[in-house]
Figure 1 (tube, rainbow, N blue to C red):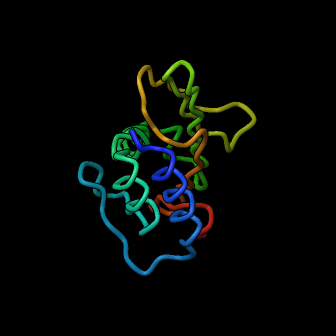
Figure 2: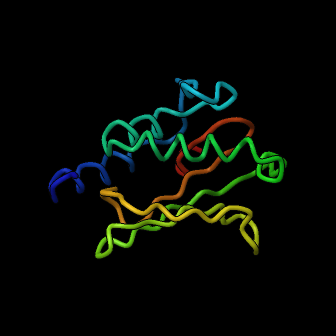
Length: 123
């Protein structure tokens, strides 16, 4: 778990990413590339589990058929839980509850476009 100063630094760090020159292939789902900002988020927040979850849902044909995916993690800090959803539709295809998390931000959105997972600011 990040302390308050580290959480502020994470938020400020994420704001620095605009576009990406380097892409990293996901370790398990090789079709998925991650931008510099996503790798920074995963490393800094110890949240590779989040990229793993998004990658695992790409195996669902209904999810994979979506050309533009918006993945949002909503954290219920007081309960230590979170909800991951692909909110780009009026009715999400995926809503997954994460029973235990120490993810430091109350909410984060990641986009998945053309095989690349990115921060919205990197679009």
